[in-house]
Amino acid sequence: MAAVILVPLAVVLIAFAVANRQSVTVSLDPFSPDRPAGSLTLPLFALIIGLLVIGVLIGGLASWLRHGKWRRLARRSEREANALRAEIASLRHKPEAPLTPSQSPPSERLQLKPPVR
Image (cartoon, rainbow, N blue to C red):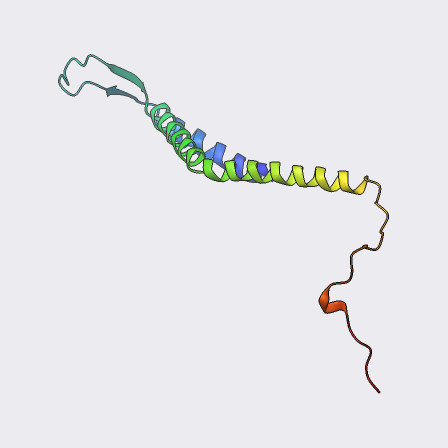
């Protein structure tokens, strides 16, 4: 299934790289365009693919940071569920106490008089 997506993507990337082999100069100095202090010369396809990879990484980091609240909630819920499972397991293995009737008189609402005939 992955080959259905990866093979055409690889073909497109290879075709893009072959068609854009010319070198470009990327300057990071806005004040001296003739002799920049910081510049980089590389093929156009390398620049575009590199910027695409950087964009994916920045987007992934932003998404990861944004979903931190949900990961924290999931961890807390998992801890609570594990504690409840442990409590249920301990209650299942605990011997039952014998049921004995209470020595106190029944409550007021349970004292019913027999019906009169």
